[in-house]
Length: 206
Image 1 (tube, one colour):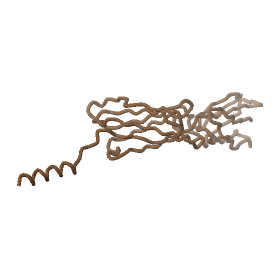
Image 2 (cartoon, rainbow, N blue to C red):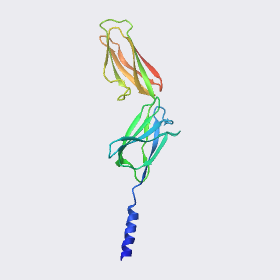
Image 3 (cartoon, rainbow, N blue to C red):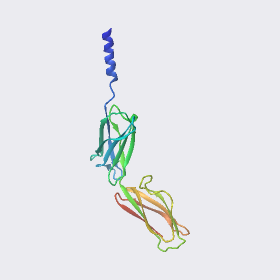
Image 4 (cartoon, one colour):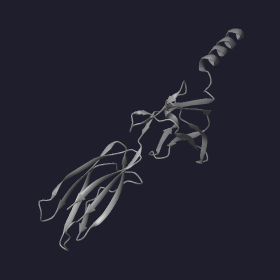
């Protein structure tokens, strides 16, 4: 009887197994400006401890020619993980992964995409200024909600104007404004495709 009991206990233990001691996180980072893998990007993995709430670096790596990255790390009492991806002249990526979302039986796959930085120069020049001149323009298309982004508010200019404003944008993407000069028929829409890593000018003369 005892022999049968121990045999069942042994089989039960094998069936339950143990939680994996290591976790695997991998994926591909894409450059959406050129529709190619992003090589040479720095990928850093951080963890937030469930017991101390401390933020600590687990590891760092660099994407290969196919944009691939991989982390194999020890499983600990971690509440969540944060992936940060950076490369000069590209927009940073930051993404949180909850502990509950990790695959315990294989790789957790997280693919990411970013774009090259570019800039739109909005060149504004009033050729025959008068104190009563009033120009306004509104961004219709272009990057929003980043630390370097221009606001989406209506811009107003009065009298003599000779200035340039610079707005960051996704490379190979449109930047478009709608403008109007009060009391005149001078209004319309101006658009450019901003070149990656460079500045493209929108000329607004009136």
